[in-house]
Image 1 (cartoon, rainbow, N blue to C red):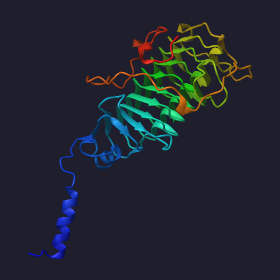
Image 2 (cartoon, helix red, strand yellow; image 1 turned 90 degrees about the vertical axis):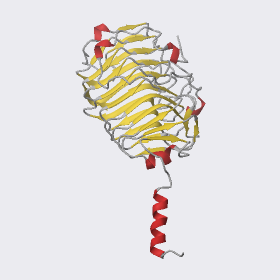
Image 3 (cartoon, rainbow, N blue to C red; image 1 turned 135 degrees about the vertical axis):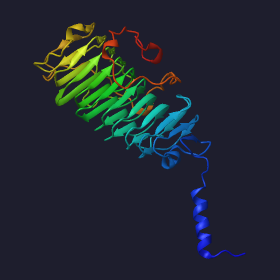
Length: 349
């Protein structure tokens, strides 16, 4: 029997709408859909996309609220830019989580969070990305935790242009970057806690026209004189921690050592709360209070291209247990030892 034309058209549309049966709150790639982007595009709010091991040559744009993208195995789920695509994952929706995977070889950022709230980046390896490993800009109420960044020509981890930020950066390792961590115009409940920023050209910087209410506690900032890293744009080398135009900040229980230039550089007139509780020893100059003044720099060796930086060591998997509360417990971060996260680092003292 020949169906009426209109009825046939209805059946065709219905068939198309059910062409992907069984997709629910969890979508598996590539078992159900062949690419991460395909899964993201059809996922409903709050869905989890579980990605099996493989190299995914794509750039993922997330525009649906509340998605979680989770790799089944951190070192084997790889989003590879092939030094051709700009970003690995772009978070352009609120309340998105990226977990337990690797982003590498992008010409800009490994993970970019832009103008969003409620983000969470956990157990991510960001290696050999030209600008930033993990970059949150104009973003608030977020967490970057237990992640690793290397081979970035701007910074391994960066938070910028937020006030109030309500952002927590904790338990991360940055090495073989131009700068380990960079905060730019990031003020108001901005927490940098218990990280290892060692083996970069510059350990960490925090700068703004006016920056305040930043908490830097329990970090290891050491031996930032790694030649086999991308050059820093201003030619800086051998610098541990730099705080410029910053006021009303808590800088406490950090170990800053082995940096051949300056351990801690401050703008004139700064007196961060808790400065006396830091251990700042064994640097070319331990503390400078005139960081804005011209100075003779430590001679910087020629940098290497971002995609020639050595591959990262194997990083720990995200545990099955629930992730810790987003709210930071500052008091639990003690003065670190020099071997903080040695098991996750390639550059060791």
